[in-house]
Image (cartoon, rainbow, N blue to C red; front, side):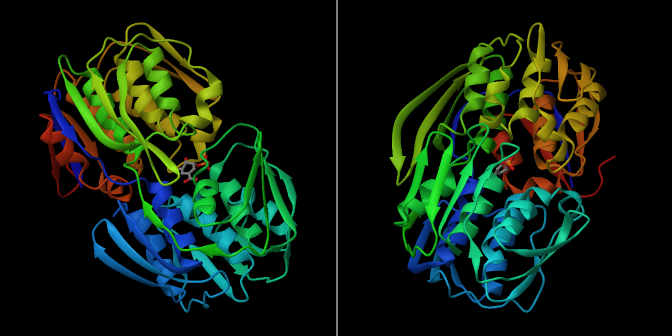
Length: 436
Ligand code: S3P
């Protein structure tokens, strides 16, 4: 698959982007181990979450698909999962693998977690180390997947200081903590997304947050809940970016998750001069949502505050595009974690933006991006959904046609990306084949 984007910026409209990926994964895993029936609406029907869905089904959980975005999960209870008779293939999803490892560490059965080319190259020691300290028995390929988990039903709680800010690692430990003896505590160096804590609370689990320390007592049962998944702010970001870079657009995105542990991107864009307003702020169970109104804006480069990195961790590919379209220079620092995402996102975005004529200098932990706009060209996604979508948005305001190669991974998080941008007036065609 590829995208062919011809010049033609988005105009105006109202859109709803698909459901939040992080919340959808958690709804599947936690709904599966809850007592009773969990109804999920707004579910992300993307490949990453479908991999989690298939994995839960392989462990005996009945999950009915009522529609693309609605599920009914027959929770089997905290100790009701059964041994899978297949390897659990989690595709491209680091979240699925790391959270699932926490879930499986304390089961009375063994399991194997694997994934695609990108996932099997991603670091897993960050979860193996704390889970092992709890008593987990996990074998890996030199710290990378596949993970072979010899389940140990007598885990013990730990008090663990995360060496890096990671919601995936925090969540993995907390989920394992549900199966551990005593209290499990995680201390974060920087605040990361707290969807696990919020969803556990909505299912009746007592999760204590004290500053940057999060604790729960093992052995607590989860009660089924109705989970209405917000639209994904990380997907919304691409539409927001397209509207900002256009000349005269005004776009409203409905029901977007605006959990404060996720909204760093809005703070960074606003500080660069973006006209973004939250309207109709409300709450969907434990998660805050709003309609986001965005108007085309003149962006100004700046030194991006590294304190916002963990609150905008997935949005830097899009922010690199914003920087390349802004006036002046933007300096990104503190982004070393981007090098171990679905691709090395600093390198992938530097390559893509340079191919479109932008002036980008890579640094170890970030980049220096000089504004100046985009020329035509052909760019690689490096198998990374967010790189593909960011560069496609750059194409909407480029001087000539932009082809983005290998766009299949977009299906992991944002099915319908090209049609949503198209519905707002962009000239983007999703084509079969390599497209070169
Ligand atoms: C996620 C956490 C983030 C993010 C990922 C989803 C989650 O990863 O990049 O896309 O759902 O917990 P880290 O917290 O490991 O940086």
